Amino acid sequence: MYLLISLNFVGWQFWLAALIFFIIIEVVTVSLVSTWFMIGALAALILDLAGASIAVQIIVFFIVSTVSLLVFLFVIKPKFNKKTEQIEKTNADRIVGQEGIVLLEINPLANTGQIRVKGQVWSAGSYDDLIITEDTLVIVQEIKGVKAIVVPQSEAVSTD
Image (cartoon, rainbow, N blue to C red):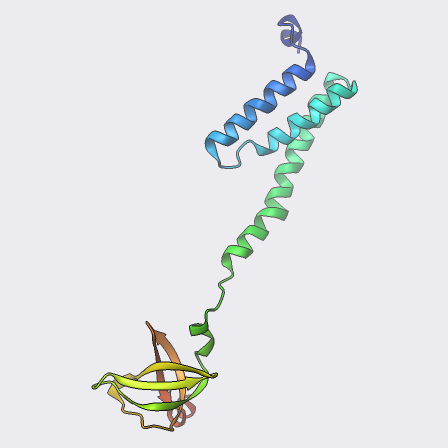
């Protein structure tokens, strides 16, 4: 600190310069590498303006910086990860495993077929070129593009 005094730096000027330096680093990197130090420098700046000794300012700088980093790592970061891991189901996902009824005969060779599932009409297809007649109860196995791929309910029950 003797060097700072000999350069005519007052404590608040040093902490303000440090704060600006850490802000510039953060803006340039956008990687959360100096955010903790910005918070620590701000705390030390406030303490200097309140008249605290240089030793207290330095100790508080390191403590506040460390606590800020730990709060981010153990409190904030896990919440961000949970939000990115949650996958919102779309309407298509919601009908998988649901029972429907064939409205228009499902014929993969003729590329025809419609079902009603949960009040919605879907284009439908079947596995293994299986033809499924109208009014047959089916279970949606998966969604391929815009088609619900189904199996007759009797086959779905026997495979479970």
